[in-house]
Length: 176
Length: 151
Image (cartoon, rainbow over all chains, first blue to last red; front, side, top):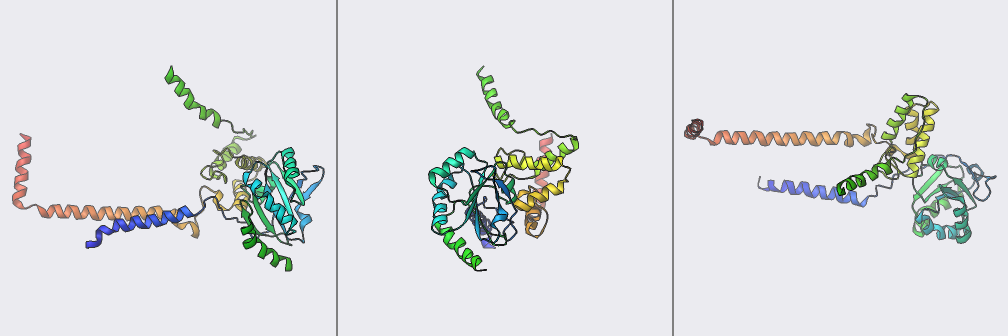
């Protein structure tokens, strides 16, 4: 009975723990519902030649990365150099979707900083990216030979994410 | 004069907010459904806003999709399924009642129930204590004091 005054303190501490855990979570990190589901097919106009199209179907049978970016997105600038490293050193095929961007600026950006993409499709009206559940840029998808999304990373691609999450999975998928 | 200036300054945000695209519907019922849907769907970019309130470009595109689906004659469920398939149930401002959301729906009522219980026991205990603490003499004195007041 004596310890009754401790009840509010206990409740308070419980609340502190609850809110403390809440602070460590990232509310922007909405788990994708599309992992291990077939990636929706897209066919977008090519950034460099609008008469051609960039089709996801043409990547069937390959393990590849799909990167959603835009010149308006600061994190995309930050990760660009690493994407070039991935394309040149690790020989990963990366298809880009240039999202809601200015075509001229996007071309200028790739000309100046290098182009890590084997093809870039433009998606000015979010049609393709919405089908992929994208809500921010950059986002990077790992898609397997059957066209199934195996992984998705939100935010800039880094060496650590690559080494820990993508590389082991890619090696495994390449074998299969 | 200065005051009028301030009032006008306060109205500026309303003017800015009004810059949302306008869609034409051939049927007022469809327009009503469109308005209800964009109120219920969450903008993934500014997560505490719904599609109706958000100025984010993605929200604009999601509104356009909603408009296109409705004017094509698709049902509310089809629009909602479309969004949920892509963005998960997070996109719904009103999450469905299921095992993972039980606490969300029931939690507040559990807490309310507990609070009412605590309140009731406290009130009951207080009245009991007070009733017991007055002796017959004290009652008589209290009555006398109250009667004095009346005169």
